[in-house]
Image 1 (cartoon, rainbow, N blue to C red):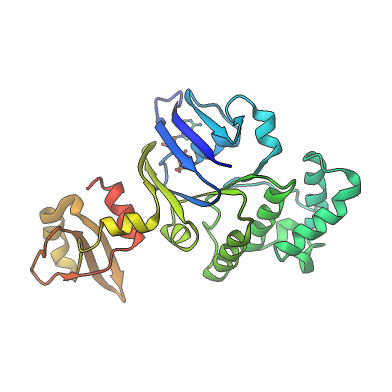
Image 2 (cartoon, rainbow, N blue to C red):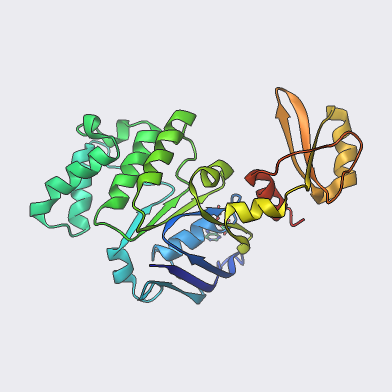
Length: 290
Ligand code: ADP
């Protein structure tokens, strides 16, 4: 099964071009959709999840026309939105059972399905506690359990790790990486590490456009020998920004000291040292349109 997106465009009533001619081929496995806030990720995810319409273009999942045959998509879709509401007093078991009813899972199978999912996402011990009392990480794992109801072939998770602490994030990564090999999982995120840890295929989008689509490795190869770093004084930053412009791709503090990364085909001299390109550099390179 493959999800094929062709020339998808969407302009909101206020004139914002959230998607501009987006074409992607998304195979089974984890697919990372990486972009800064406002890039158009949620617009794309919501369109694929049949929650809103595009202006033009197409999307097909296997032989399903995603934009027209919404009922068929919904039968095979698991969706974890950025924010999902929970009923205040319902326990995880009650809420998942309720969602299973809505998904059309037959009464005779519901109990076993709900139990198996709660075990799978490691919430079995707290299954009778109210979901609204869960930590961020537990809530996201519950979100995955509900997204897995009904054995979906397409799973969409929108910014799932925002707000999780490092331990919770790791548990969530492990859970996502275990989700079937025969399903398409689209992980939309602005966090480079999410993609680095999990996704054999990825795209980078910004301002509604696809800037890169391919493997993380190919993107890294493209930058080999071109990333240079230097520890600087804070007072030097302005001059470097003026000198390098968009090619100054990151400026971060390491142990309180500023370290800049620049893109350069050859050795820039001036105390710069060659450094390994990471996915973060790939991201900044594309976002800065270098
Ligand atoms: P992301 O998920 O990558 O943060 P979004 O798809 O939410 O991006 O937003 C893309 C752009 O569209 C942003 O500029 C956002 O402000 C705008 N946008 C999103 N939803 C709406 C809407 N309902 N009406 C108008 N503009 C919107």
